[in-house]
Length: 310
Ligand SMILES: [Zn+2]
Image (cartoon, rainbow, N blue to C red; front, side, top):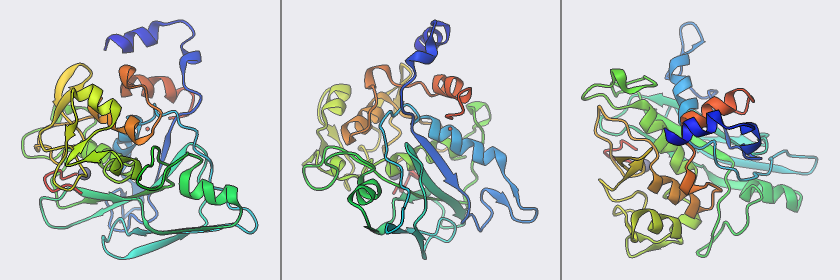
């Protein structure tokens, strides 16, 4: 809160904005089971969609320059994603355009077994052909050293998120109506975005795991030692604590969130994204409310079952 006040009252605050801000575009093309769209009327469910934008705002302070994916004559690319409303079948996306500093995320939901809240992935069978520049844009977004066991950075086109419609979700932007037993949709959305941003997935993440502990420098600094991971190396160990806006909180990227509670990205979560290669100043972590306020005016602006997270 202190830094929020400071930013809003500082003269020339616009000059302090980063040159690049990460934009996450949500695509509802495959929302065919009506999780974000009233299928009877075709009307968007604006409350739910706004929560996705709110989740994205937690990452809008990442200042990486991501190359646009814009196929020219002779260029082509494709990737397959899990259908975000059906879970199983793969959809092939071909030659889609993605703007600079932007990720495209296909979202949907359907009923499944209780317990799981959602899952995310960045797709399968990515192919790209054409100019070297184009292939680099598709595979790394212009980031350096993103592939292999010594990777230090990460670049991705986007991905997909499926939400389990069987849950009795809390769809509120603040916690005033969040009551026991209801999983918090904002928490799950923010967590799943974290996986698309490379948490538990990126080569640069995997490269920094040693015997079940994450050894990235920023994370070690934030936690005080190497950070214990879950058995799959895809989350912090369950119950790992850090702080959100100066208050102790269970980490966003551990595998579980108690229904009826909200977890947002802590200092340790942001440290992990820095270690994955994102440009984020961990010591002055972007307070999402601040960014939302500042960026709205510029039009720049944004499992987890976490019980059985994926
Ligand atoms: Zn997860």
